[in-house]
Image (cartoon, rainbow, N blue to C red):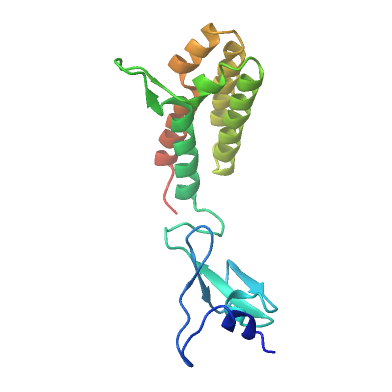
Length: 184
């Protein structure tokens, strides 16, 4: 029995017919490639298409996502989107007041505030990984600390979370700093 025979039992195909593309769970096409960056090795009868031991496949994203290290722009876009989700994702109906999941999660006493503070600290860590100087990181940490401490006060802290928007402030400061940096 060949490695291909397990697949031939479930589907019939013409000899020499090309197999349809293999799509992973994220919608990315898996192509047989040279095994460069982002590839993986499949072996045995369950290798994609029954290709056999040692076959190397390479992911090619259909949605433009990358499986390798993120660029500076991609990292910044990721933390920018997260900060908007935390602080300004929704609008209070009938008003112009914007709020995010930070204000909602913060309604859960102590645990909610600790969780959102941890996420905010991760954003600051990513800013440091982008090369933000220590003075900027210190200011960002001050915003997160103020947001976290005042957020612990029931209801008044949640109103402060909605108005202060520490994460959006931090991203604004980071963006301003990044715009001053020379392009590589």
